[in-house]
Length: 202
Ligand SMILES: [Zn+2]
Image 1 (cartoon, rainbow, N blue to C red):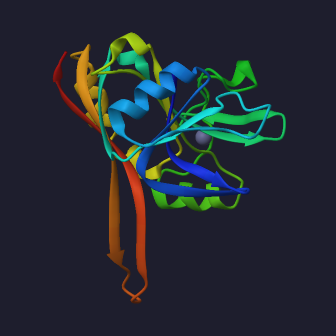
Image 2: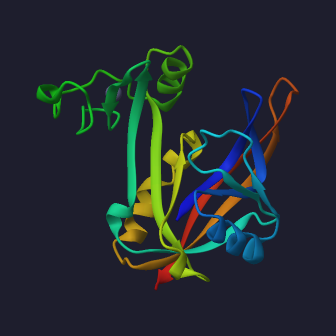
């Protein structure tokens, strides 16, 4: 059991990675991951770390099995200091929103993605809160892994991924993809985005 990550913290600053990173609370799991995907097991110096065994692999694509459609959870969430304060699907409050009586009511988020991003950046609106539970195709005995992301670019892919998951259990590839482009003003932009590619029934 463990978690899959597309980034890490350097000091307090989050840094995107171009190859997948795994963390686990189980040293044997971390050793197996390292043997499968490269990289070595590093033990976190933080005594409080929940998943102290850390592997920065040398692979940007991991084959997985997704067992059911509910293995993918997607919602929009804004967190305050004490936990979530706005949990919705972009239009209505959903289960998980702190005021339970408001679930099902319109949440007031703007319709356009650009406006939602702006609100999120300003700290007044929620951002994507997407999680996927899966097993490794080459080592299903290692149990479940969880991938959690706030990626805006994955939001655009969700409808297609959900359609693919209707055939679950499915095989899929989780990929970190490098996106590079030059803006109209000539600024060069590069970032990595996660991609979930459904390959067919497992
Ligand atoms: Zn909302």
